[in-house]
Length: 269
Image (tube, rainbow, N blue to C red; front, side, top):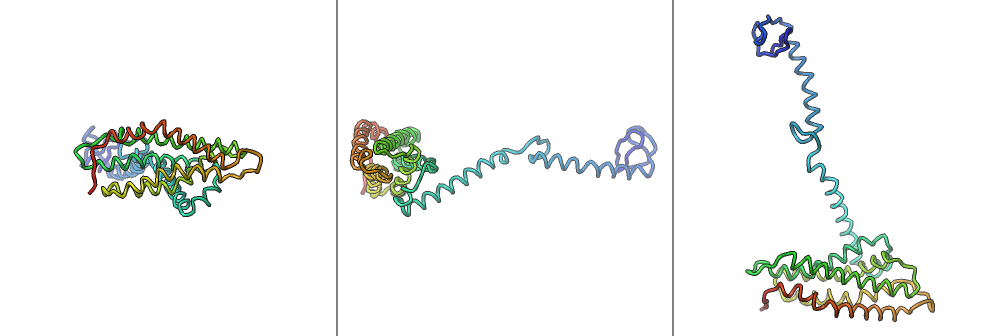
């Protein structure tokens, strides 16, 4: 390549410039190669800075999402460790939990609320009648989550009536921890639902009824109660059950109707 010393035009070669006609000297070839070499790093740096190819002015969408994806991956791994560790010894681990585990308690309650309608939705897969995911899963899940948060609130009231200094976050954290085994039962029920097995009914009953009957008692009794300083733990537990059953009666028809109204007729053989 030859570069004209007069106008700077870079040509393929020859004795004269293709643009202005000036006679080219032998040194013009070296000048052209030097100019090309100095320009190459600049273009390379531009492309590397953009990381999106020629003409890119910023990081790619993948690069922008990577921090969030890494956080989500790390968070899910942490919750899985929490779930498995709690599942091994739910009462021993749960009664030691404080407000720092509040988020894990909320996640467990949400999982519990989602799994119940999700298994019924799985039953409808492959059938001619296919309800919408929103009507079959999302709406009932919100209702179940509200129910479980109300039960946790009743537990908190009983704990405070017993003159315990525990905060709401601490009560929810323990409520979620004691709920872990019943979430595991609902996961098993979901597997049986995918297999279209009638065994799902057993695990669904254990998961739902078992949680309602046992978790409040575990939560109330997991806190230290000073004798004679407040409401006895037994009476606190009874009051919690009374409030829970009243709530169930008021919400039962709505809870059942949300799911059953979306289901076709099923029979198992």
